[in-house]
Structures are given as structure tokens and as C-alpha cells.
Image 1 (spheres, rainbow, N blue to C red):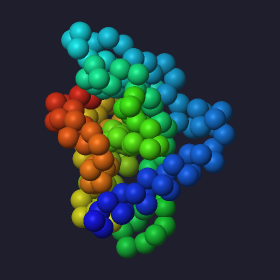
Image 2 (tube, rainbow, N blue to C red):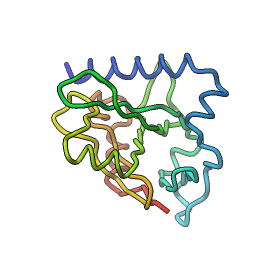
Image 3 (tube, helix red, strand yellow):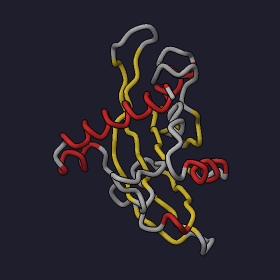
Length: 173
């Protein structure tokens, strides 16, 4: 129950911050330009392509019409509340998601190699979770990871997202 409450509180905070940003600033800060849905070699799936950070993410056909939300992760020094690092978080949202019936999102945190080294050395933390983000891929500039406890609220579709993540859908380039 506490996990769901924490997840809900974080989600409300993130949505509130994003709502305050003008659309033009949102696009500039969390640019997903040239990110597009492309047919993958498998006819039964869709692929999100992010050229800015250099990765593709395969999704089941049921996600056709997904949306992309830009956000920001924040991290700090252990045992303080001070934010010392920031970076982009790209959220893939299921096309059936609504305010009345939210579904599990797929949030992808983007770290520089330097930031990732700090996380691995326990010099940068993202949350009160006893573990850090989970790496799902990397290229020569960035490490892509899932936030700790991103799926602990168990909204509709969390099982599907778990299967998607287990299929290793992120392909860096």
C-alpha cells in the first residue's frame, strides 16, 4: 500500500511539473524530434525511434498510436535532499491511457556515462528505493534505464509492460 502511495505521489508531482511547462519549452527541453512510429521487421509490432539519444524501442501492435511524454529525472548525493544531477526521462504511454483509466507507462531514464558511473558507485541516488535504476541498454554516449519501482503501483497493463521489458525491446544505435 505504501509503495502505491509513493508511486502515486511521484506521478502527481511529475504531471504537475509538466503541466506548468509551456508546450514550446517542453518540446525544446525534452525533444523527441524525429521520433516516430515505424513498422518493424515483425509485422505485429511498432517501433518508437528516438534519434536524439540513439535508440529504438519495440512495442506490441496493441501499442500502435502510443504517445511520448518528456520529463526529467533528478538525483542527488546520498543522505541529502540536494539535487545535483538531472537528465531526460522519456515516457512511452499506451494509446488507451486516460485520466479516468490510467495504464502502466514505460519510463526510460537517459544518463550520460559519467552520471551512470556515479550511480554505480552509489554517489548518486534517484529515490528512497534500496536499489537504483535498472539498465536496459546503452550506446557510446548514453545509458538507458528503468526507474526504481516504476511498476510498483500495479495499474492496468503492468503485466504487459513487464513482458515488454523482459523481451529486451530497447536497441541502441
